[in-house]
Image (cartoon, rainbow over all chains, first blue to last red; front, side, top):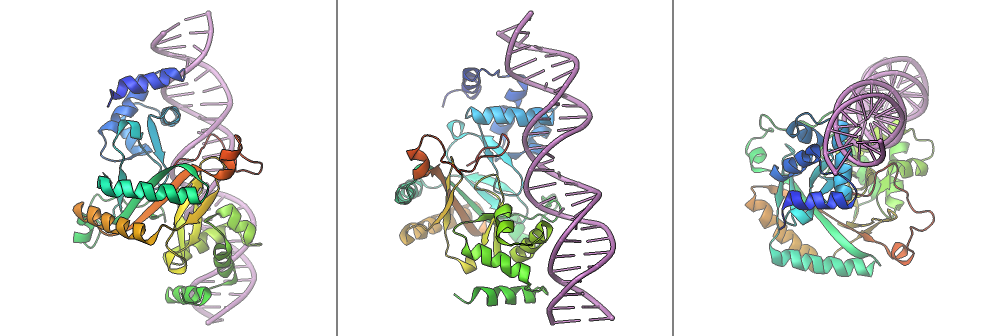
Amino acid sequence: MPDLHDTAGERLRADNQRYTTGRRAIVDALAAAEGPLTMQELLDACDGLAQSSAYRNLTVLERNGVVRRLSALDEFTRYELAEAFSEHHHHLVCGTCGRIEDFVMPPSLEASLEAGLDSVAAAHGFGDVTHELDLVGTCGRCSASNTAPPGALSWPGSRRPVR
Amino acid sequence: MPDLHDTAGERLRADNQRYTTGRRAIVDALAAAEGPLTMQELLDACDGLAQSSAYRNLTVLERNGVVRRLSALDEFTRYELAEAFSEHHHHLVCGTCGRIEDFVMPPSLEASLEAGLDSVAAAHGFGDVTHELDLVGTCGRCSASNTAPPGALSWPGSRRPVR
DNA sequence: CTCAGTGCAAAGGATTTGCATGCCG
DNA sequence: CGGCATGCAAATCCTTTGCACTGAG
């Protein structure tokens, strides 16, 4: 895999954009994370970056295939590096505490899934499909304790995890 | 499959809620739809229902397992009947026009996927998982015409389909 | 010099909540 | 009667935009 920053910079330059300190900080934060980050987590990791700049930078990074925006998983929008810079993976979401982990499927299963999906898509007249697969369950920590562990995410307002 | 309204009514009563006209209208609209509906589509289908009531009713219906809320697919939250009242299915999203269709996978593939996912989840200490699988591609209509067909969804603001 | 990038504050849009009233059990 | 349900309006929360200023090429 080519160097993350080199490639990201190239892609932005091709779009007449600069690979600035703030943008590099975002990419670094995403690369260091173990799963997709929320805006708040990202801001915490990129000290001094204004929220509006973060949103604008993420838009640019997404447009150029450096970052991927996930609107699902839970009620927060999350961001992760695009697949060009990370292994093809899926998400494991704890419906109790909100923890999110990445995982990869056994290659044989991934392959048969892809083959099956391609034919299903074709049958519906859809072409060029990509898939998104997530799991929702209860993580070990939460199933051990009846209640969510201390420090667990509490869902803001009346909102609850959706999937 | 037991009668939709009877069962829905039972579930609400068990939660000390009433199965009112407005709630029945929501369930009818979702049952008649060919795919998950947005709030706007739902309001259009339920004449006279206040938006705040719709949100509140959907919350109740979701809490009692009648409705499922989807926060992904595109940038709009969508609602569909819970799986107890519909076949286990997935979603096919056109990234160009926003069209969303339901589809079911071949049973053998669905079964092997579930088995594989269960073991992956177990390996990560997660139990009791359900999966969510969606496809994003280009529908036949959009791939035929270079541009999105008339009447196609236009993505509001700078937002674009995410998955 | 010029144009993209940034921060701050205001604007937007979807969703939630407060409150008074209507209606079912 | 008592409590859930509903409408309307106000409040929130996340995200986007307007604008003036800074900075890199």
